[in-house]
Image (cartoon, rainbow, N blue to C red; front, top):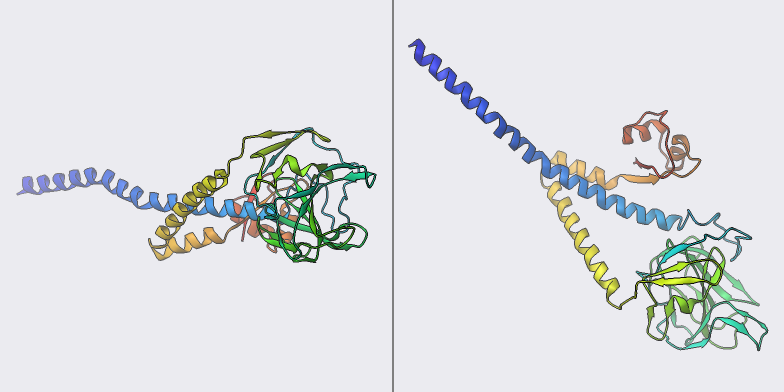
Length: 326
């Protein structure tokens, strides 16, 4: 009798020991998808929030200030020796293809023409060339007339002049292709057209080096700015390159969204975690900032900021560091 009890007990213990790795694997298997999905949620959230941050203060690392009163407000700022301008994800500012006046010196008027004039009909829609933030909208009677200045995350500022009407105001966030004005002949203009300029830190760049109005395309994927009047194109642009990249990004985003819905179906706890990840916002630390100044900027507390990031309230932060806040 005693032998049978011992035998049964031994068998039970043996089965329990053998089952432990399987139980552990089951536990890992249950938890792993959640971790994976949460990482996907964080990745999508961070990507979107970075994009939003770039639009809230575009090219902040390049420009010394944000000035809404003067078009060229940078004085004798030092130009970078080299700066790579991303020309992808663009929109032609007008569908009109005829350039009526090129960039360069005009003998007739004895002055430099600092942009391109593109033929237009009164009331034609003028669109933002890239995503960006509107820096200036104003009326200049003896110059641009109704003008819009947009700063873009790629470092460029684009200027659109002679509108019969501006459709945006300073501080507006715009996406490439958004309507920003209606073509006209306000200001110093002899006929209806769009006056279009491209600048970097106030330095003029011939728009024809970047935009091909005849073919309604950009001239390359990237333009390397190398000081006054110099630059190099990188990557020959093809009409479908933007679409191919957008398709790739869409596929990646859709995959991530499927992951999010999968997490939400796991359990109420997982669903709450997923929503929390989606609602988490991020801040990229800039030079001179502290936990206190960041907390004040986003309407939170140092304690909450520290808790969200698993750091001490006295922790030293560095420029470029990513902090979460809610």
